[in-house]
Image (tube, rainbow, N blue to C red; front, top):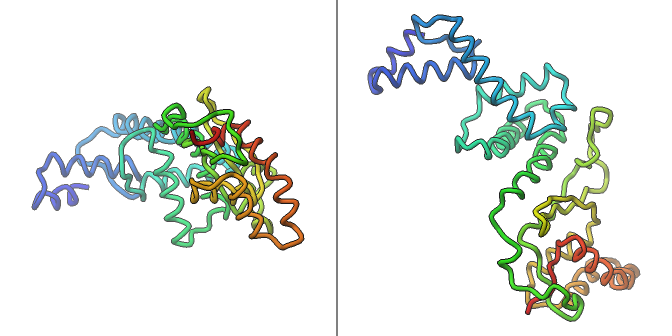
Length: 262
């Protein structure tokens, strides 16, 4: 690696060139030789600490992916992340998001990863993302027991509607589909007043209802239900409206809806 270190010297102080060479070696020892005159036994300690720390963080952030992928496939993916990805931030709490960016780039490049990998990574990341989200329910004005049909429903700032092609909540080592099912998977992840994060499986109409409430904050719950019902065939609209009140109350019970506007 002496040539690479010297090549940096034209525009980079030598100590920085040594740091670049050392970091490149840690990220990918097979393709990047270490700086010269370093004891390989000591380097091995750094190599193991670096890899094991990052691999452990990723395994903790994505336990389902770690359980699904065979060991060899998982470690190849981790090594590629270390070698190829350039993170936007050094924060440990952001390593999950960086890993998703890495997987998205691989998908765009046509790499032969499982077709559900990016969605599953996002699904696993969401829980931590909501746990550290700085929005607070108590900062949102609302009447908790308000009439959701006659009033204007208020969506929790820590409730995220999610739509995936694959049933990410069902993926496992025994269930790894090659093709997505005909219907998408609709989920809502929410952090409640007790700061616990939970997921609920819903249908497309519920996702559409939340979109209508968010897009039309001045509309009543009944108005939003009417807009959703209008998207369905005429023969299905009555059932959408009939079940709308129960749908709104179920969302309030799970603290996806906080109540109504004062």
